[in-house]
Length: 388
Image 1 (cartoon, one colour):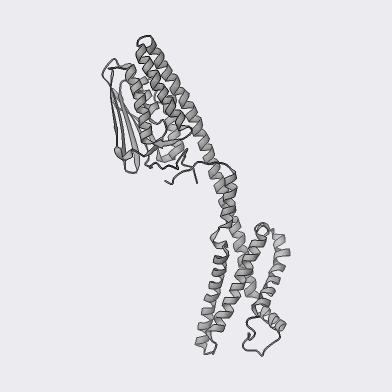
Image 2 (cartoon, one colour; image 1 turned 90 degrees about the horizontal axis):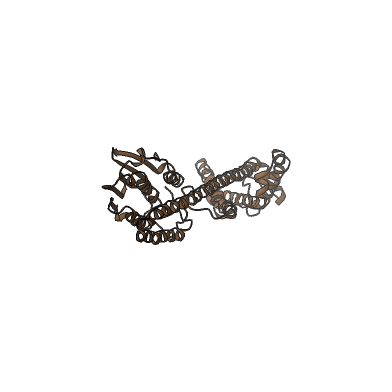
């Protein structure tokens, strides 16, 4: 999967389109003229071999020189016309092609012959020397079909290139608009998740105020730490796994205060995944649901196991809890937190991400989350899978 990127603004799109048009390889003057010249030299090789085998005494210099010069001139002329009249070439109607471009093609062929005959005064070789204009007219008539073919091939090449560039521009616009929509959707989900988390945490603290003020005070401090982490992340969507683990450990410490002695928890993280990128607040909503709809139903002996490991080219997270779980609990696996995680996985990874809930046995439920393995780099912020 290619590395995604956040869209900054629309003006960069237009700038990118102009750069694409300007820097197209085949419209670079050196490349274009060199390609034309090489084409002419290939024709020269064919003619020289034919002349050589036919027994004519014609040196390779005159053959390669004349052909090379002719196609070099056509390369320069064609590129100059493209450079000067590109919008017209790309947008000309059929009527304009017939009434404007066709006469221009004849004039261009004649001008090309006027230039070409200057360094080759002895061509044609089978005729006595002729005055300059007579040679121009003679060669113009003899080369008209070939010259017109060259002109119109170049014309339709540039016209086709324009269609291709516009097609690529439309594709880029569509991709960037899709990326902007995805970023907006993810931002909305994050805005939904933070108040949801804060509301549930405040309810937990409120329930402790009547029974254990010290625990409630400690939870307030831990909640402040969580809010600080959330604010520091701003709108970053993918964060290193170690940051997410730091967040979830603080959250688990809060729950330890509330469910003191009732839950045995384990957290296992593959050290190889220390810098792997994960969606921000991926684990907290799942763990919260494990407590609310599973562990909170137990008076003692609750179990919570969190495992994060690499499986091939994916990162897999397993969260297993005892109790009624998601399937038998009131949320049915469709609470705000879980729906939020599912939607963000879809927006980030499309079909490459997965979210599954399984009942391991009548007293244990397991949530499995998988997404592509991607290492953290300093320039990755606020990313989605739809970037250019």
